[in-house]
Length: 271
Image (cartoon, rainbow, N blue to C red; front, side):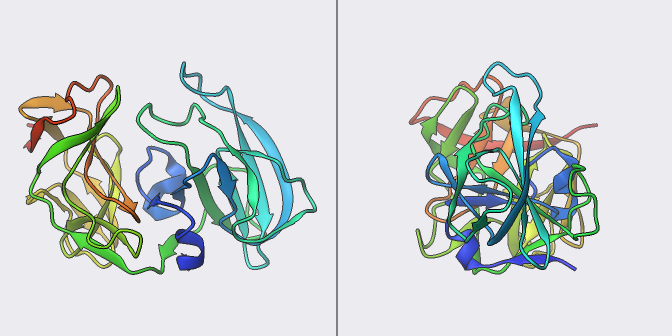
């Protein structure tokens, strides 16, 4: 049975993704990444803090050496959060929206990934500390699927990412939206992570008019593909659900697409 997150939780954050991660904790949408607008992490759940634990993170030059796990007993489940340096202690009670601590840029992040809260749920009798084994998560919110033809103009750029102006968000601030796929919303890192997902009842895994994977329930196994921006290979496309803005995000370890450049995305199947 899936744990459902509704608007009270989701609308605290400007973005969420169930599948945009390389880690097994996200397999089949069993965890969600929540992106706050501040460096202080608002709690996605209400309950009693039962433990906090510092864990070692992979060594990366742009990231902290340690990450942190916070366990919160919601009554029905135990919530697990990562990537927050806790200011709460075991025995404290928190409500939805209360500050848990400051976000941590951990070595689990790829260089193009912004700071966020990782959230998963376990039954009380389960192993609460193992990385995998969380319950599936569903989102109860009006999620709009927006078509995209694979083109756009770069509006924002970093060393490892650019954001295009297309597709545009249909209702900024009022609802979450994502790139359309078979009538639903495509979620995940294509093709740089092993798989992704199609949310909101989509029936096919498609991107910019091209089939990109095999859909089973809501989980997608990506085809072996190369993504090209204006004919040059890049690492891939980061797909998510946005509340205030949309626009496709392209990622690479050395991105060379300046602001103002028009981009056409193409997808080539690997032989």
